[in-house]
Length: 339
Image (cartoon, rainbow, N blue to C red; front, side):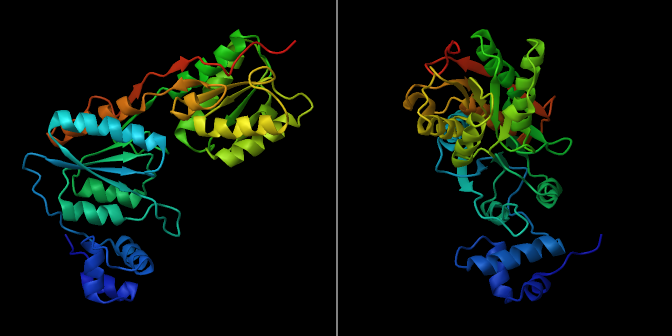
């Protein structure tokens, strides 16, 4: 097998010194962001292979959790689940946020550098969108990893844990149908994301089963952004026949929907019923309290950690996809449509 490029070749490609390239490879922090970007892109482009510093034959004691962000109640629930399961397994967890993006729009590979330095025995990824090169990097080094609620459909053989999103969409829509609503809209996330597509598919399936006509103009995508959800709700209210109810595919977006309704002087649920998705703490704090579909975030994270431990011990899960049940949590944001 041909040897890969040397660190000197990587340094020359990135236009930096060999010591600087070495700092990036070894996860040192004293490197300017632009310099780090050039080096990491050169590492990916040239296929530089870094030798893991851990012995995979030893009993695992440290795992990494790579999250999309640390300042959300979603990540708080995931951290809680991982922490509890790791304590039971006698593991330590290192948490990092993959916030920085390369020009291609994908997360930087900084967590890969640090993974090698720390000698972690496995990795959990929460809401991660990995590149083919990053999947390949992990597979080549036989580093066990599990995805929590993957953004996109993972490659064959990759282990993931998520919620029953399709059934959650069915449940939310059936609840509104049972109340007598027929003009039901959906404010969805990003159209290419797995969870968003499944929730919208569940919404459409419930309408079809009830014999209610699906209206294309009632489906709006807001990319899981609260401010965009507000704009999408205003668009729905401007239709000739505005909806009497709306299924919002995340609790955060539901906050934007509430704001739009308040701007138009409309009341929840007297004028418009609203159902969210997630059951984050925000759903209980807003007024009226939000009826929502609960997905068990902490349980999903704990399940992923337990699967990872089995994989670190040399086992292989029987199924690559594990889905945990969702359920409707009824509060005060839904009612029968106004006469």
